[in-house]
Length: 31
Image (cartoon, one colour):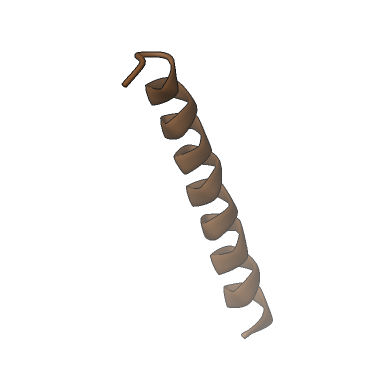
């Protein structure tokens, strides 16, 4: 377990959440 892998994982998770929220907003707009 290297300390370098932690920030990368957190960043990827953050990007995933951002993508999810964007998709949610778009779906709300189309509803």
